[in-house]
Image (cartoon, rainbow, N blue to C red; front, side, top):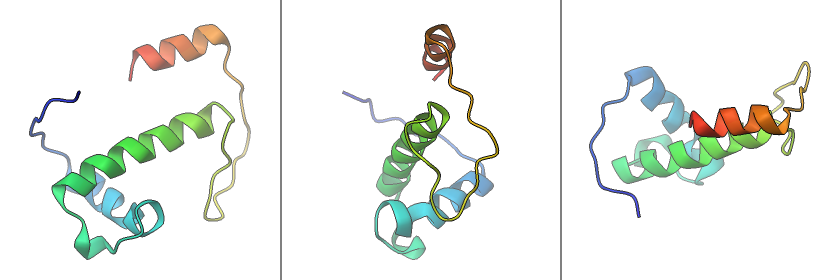
Length: 82
């Protein structure tokens, strides 16, 4: 189980997370609490990992220029750094 810890995040990252709240959580940017920020971070990191692995395609009209399928070794290295 995750431990309750306080961390500071840059204002730009907080704004990005809040801007994703309507898409990811279905709530307005103004309704985002610290609990929502944690959930947003988890879900968005998971999405990005899936996109990198080629499992998901980007949403909202984002375009992918190229998809490199990582080897098992690359995936292990990536996962060990998260």
